[in-house]
Image (cartoon, rainbow, N blue to C red):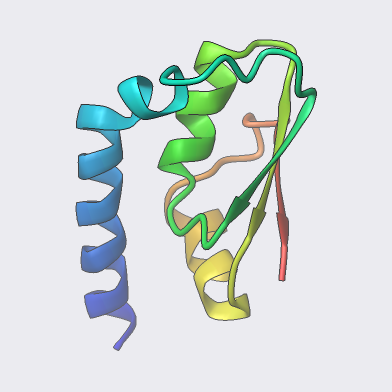
Length: 86
């Protein structure tokens, strides 16, 4: 159901909020101006990337339903450096 999906995405979001900075800074990604997040779910890792690398943009690739839910619940229009591809 949509409710279960949002709960799962919230849990994924929580995990990336705890360890995401360490993951995205484990390697220097600053030379890359475009980063692709395959299976990006809630966009939490993409947000960590935009925070750590202010010059980059992130494209999240995921299933259409996941993209729709991410846009509705997690990634706002204000996150202009994050885009989606289905």
